[in-house]
Length: 305
Ligand SMILES: *[C@@H]1O[C@H](CO)[C@@H](O)[C@H](O)[C@H]1NC(C)=O
Ligand SMILES: *[C@@H]1O[C@H](CO)[C@@H](O)[C@H](O)[C@H]1NC(C)=O
Ligand SMILES: *[C@@H]1O[C@H](CO)[C@@H](O)[C@H](O)[C@H]1NC(C)=O
Image 1 (cartoon, rainbow, N blue to C red):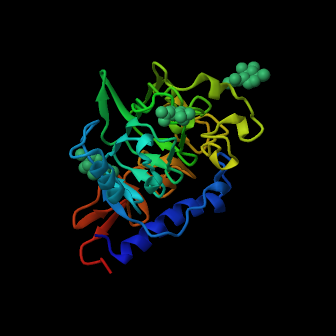
Image 2 (tube, protein in one colour):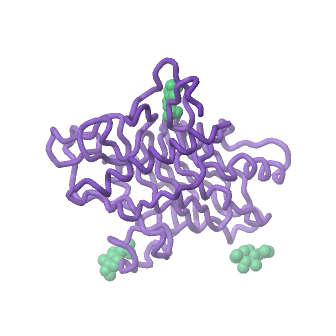
Image 3 (cartoon, rainbow, N blue to C red):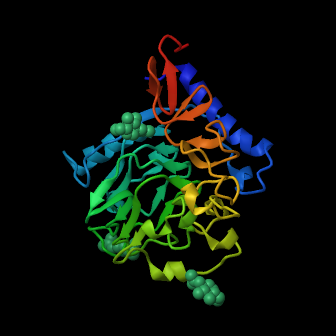
């Protein structure tokens, strides 16, 4: 369990990283004024590796998921949400505080109307799910209610999602799902929009053709509400060399490779968010000796307070 120190430190680091955005003239690459990370308590929870399966009754399964993720902000591992029925009045509001998932995110056989992940900023994709020979880090599949096929998942709310660092995205068999085709996946996917796969019945064409671009810039949105506009918007293109993250368009203006989301300069102290861990105010790929990980932070042994 995390101590107060690391909660505060993590919030501080997020504040610091996002604070840089506000204080540095970034030639407006990101619309960061909207990224107001609340000073809420951070909590780490551990993900699962069950795939589409579950054990016990459907109600026990739902209660276990709810218990695991309520209040969680950092998912260490994979977020697997499966076998959730609208017909059973399940709801997924317990996912609303999650900001970071280190593995993959799977929604399979989920028929509630909405998936409210309004806080989610990034999916690291450090582990991916293999399906049909591809490696996915976000999957939304089979979302009509099997008790009543005329209802199912309609909206996924991920307005703050800024990065899927690694792995591909799959949408399939979602007859009622809207808006996912309005999303500008390029900035989220770090320049790999072709890795977003819309397979059979990926989304509802009719909802998607409702075409009111006045609500959100470019019309990119996760639902029909101004709060659900896509926040990941970039003004300029990175050089091919940059892996989709840069602070200018030249090949010499790439972000450090430990950065996620974006950066204000070339160093690992210039990142907006760290891909993996934070150590002494800089991003690192793994925590050094004599430290342990607490969410995204490397904490020195003996420094817990
Ligand atoms: C099935 O879902 C539809 C749409 O939500 C609803 O109108 C209908 O009453 C439902 N049927 C049953 C048997 O619950
Ligand atoms: C939005 O409307 C424009 C103009 O009416 C049309 O050309 C475009 O195809 C529409 N887009 C979608 C996604 O329906
Ligand atoms: C990613 O995976 C590596 C190897 O399994 C592990 O050492 C590292 O801690 C992981 N990073 C995150 C953010 O989970």
